[in-house]
Length: 335
Image (cartoon, rainbow, N blue to C red; front, side, top):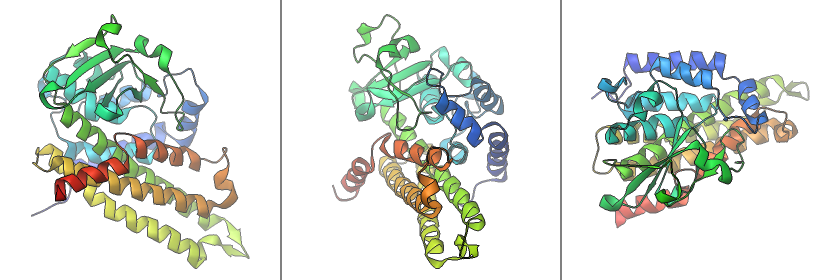
């Protein structure tokens, strides 16, 4: 059996990497940080992502989407992590778009075309969510689960700044009746929403880890001490090698979880939680190793490393932290 991604999937990933290399540089990410009153993302870039078909990968083909699966999306989300793309791309493309498709809501077309940005939060992570034009808030479990969609105006009173300033958070009323603009959605699989969100941020953390390690390797090749590059020191090599090994062990777990979601595997929840734990651990190790190898400059606000590192800190806690996901794996394995 061939477990590799197809040529088309890899070409799609490479096309996105090229776009982000041009339109989402460290300077663009820093600009999102510097504008506290802005949306936290570049609407023109968001439209470019829509034109590539990325926002509608999980949308039905008859709604203008591509009708593909998480296996097709996972590599692209990894690329958005590598570039530290500002904005709720996971919540929009992986969570909200397929949920809008399930509900048959008219906002789906605008979400696929990048005309509105939709965020989402589910269950225990609901209440605070990444800010966007629309927010889907899901509560409850099984047949008692409900999904309510709020407009951006409902978020005004509850804004706060995340540790990652380009990932702005907001809260909404839990009572749907508290907002005249709220809409209750029906027919949405809330458990699947949560798993897609957790897997999406796990994929992003793979890209963030890879981005930090690449940044650090470039730095230690240039930074010299005692007349030689610091990258030639064995201790530096060991730090980076250990982080790379952890990352390469996390990738198969994330890709397997994407397959489990795509095929609605009975152990989907277990696989997603396993992936979230491994990706978070790998990204955390990459952040620590990168910070240490950069030395004093790595602690400064002016250096780009912190933009990636603080995104990792935010995503490790998003969609269930590692302790919560370890408990879910334990429950699935040993009961």
